[in-house]
Image (cartoon, rainbow, N blue to C red; front, side, top):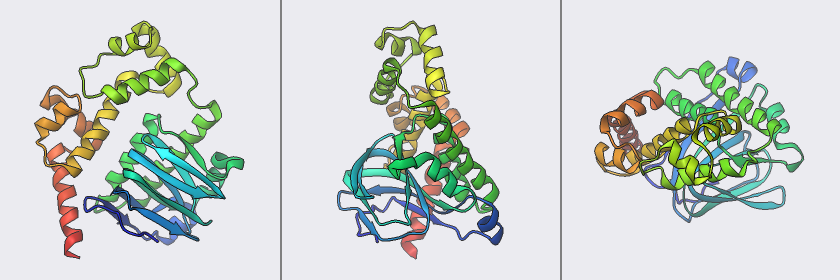
Length: 284
């Protein structure tokens, strides 16, 4: 059970799958975006779903299969919640989660978790991040579409399986470049400047980065900035102009255009939806 620590800006979406979804699809029953303080902790003996979670900021601890381990910003974890488990915040934490089941969920979980019993690695793939964002957009749609959500869950699990088979990124230059972008995304970053940080030519660096991550350095950087913008629009009252500047978009027009392309609505529309959902929960 959850023992508090969930801040008011958090969101949870519940969906009871149809008979068809239970028999044929991978379906999502619970989807949420949590903002938690240091008191957040969950103890369960059993919960009949698989859990996929991505930590946006801060860290979490997990106790599972007699192991204790930590998950930090940028990590994705898969857990079989049908077994006893405990997890909670390390300080403050922001994370997104999806409880799913059905279809080939168990087969994918066994493939990914292997002998370790759980799956944990950095979520570097833009495909994974994009699919998670798509699921959050779909669960807020009044015409909740199980088939489209299932397609995105397969997209996530398939991409994780490909990454696992290929192995995690071993190239030191790419790892350093990712760390540099995560620390300096609010600045005016050119691909040339990022390449200089790892002592590579822009051309070679771009090819190497795409080979290791399946996406260009520019696309990775933009996705990083959009993810942070979503958080600021949710938890702060800063203006769109301020958020654009803090997230590295030095033109509000470019920020709005890029946000719409990635999220499907403008920053103001996104904030309005989040606010309406928060007010609706308070009235219940």
